Image (tube, rainbow over all chains, first blue to last red; front, side):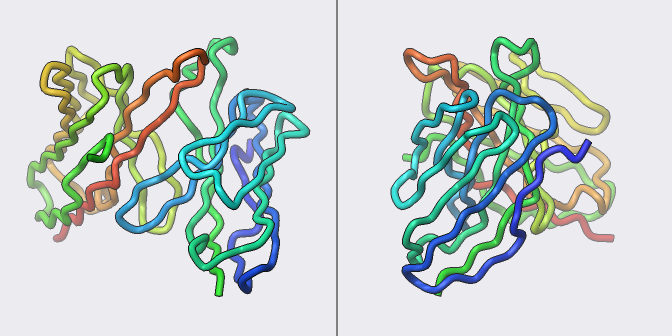
Amino acid sequence: NAGVTQTPKFRVLKTGQSMTLLCAQDMNHEYMYWYRQDPGMGLRLIHYSVGEGTTAKGEVPDGYNVSRLKKQNFLLGLESAAPSQTSVYFCASSYGPTSGGPYNEQFFGPGTRLTVL
Amino acid sequence: RKEVEQDPGPFNVPEGATVAFNCTYSNSASQSFFWYRQDCRKEPKLLMSVYSSGNEDGRFTAQLNRASQYISLLIRDSKLSDSATYLCVVTSTRRGTSYGKLTFGQGTILTVHP
């Protein structure tokens, strides 16, 4: 099993450009999450999904959109990148409460390092 | 006030030392507690859950004090490979949903030197 994978690993954008980060998991997890990690701030939740076709806002959703068209994939979009979105982005997944697994344990992907100039 | 607060360190200790990290949380309704470990430029990974009765996993001991809203992690006989950032994580269930929201502390940096 690959676990949670993210593409790309690195990206440099200019202000105003758009991009999509892809997250994929092969553990049949119900829940998926997007976080950003900045120095001194810890991980902050951007958006999350509790199942295929559903998404919800986290703590810092502004400037981002997400989609969960397939259970195994969770996409994070930046429509018009800003320097404040320079960060490391982590995707994570976990079981849902109906799956019988410990849904509070989240499994993280390796991260995407994004720089916006 | 941050929901989860940790001393960011860094803690620099020699091999074989015992080191303790503390964490406080502000939401008294928090339900579950964890320590995650994050190596440099890597993703966080679950180290251990924290139970009210305290729990131990090899050289690692975690304690929870609900009355003081305080969590601790003790590492005995430190190894070079213990060098990492340790993240305190607290969960609470959002009203009306079954989603368990994880809130991360900013992390405590540990460096173990020879």
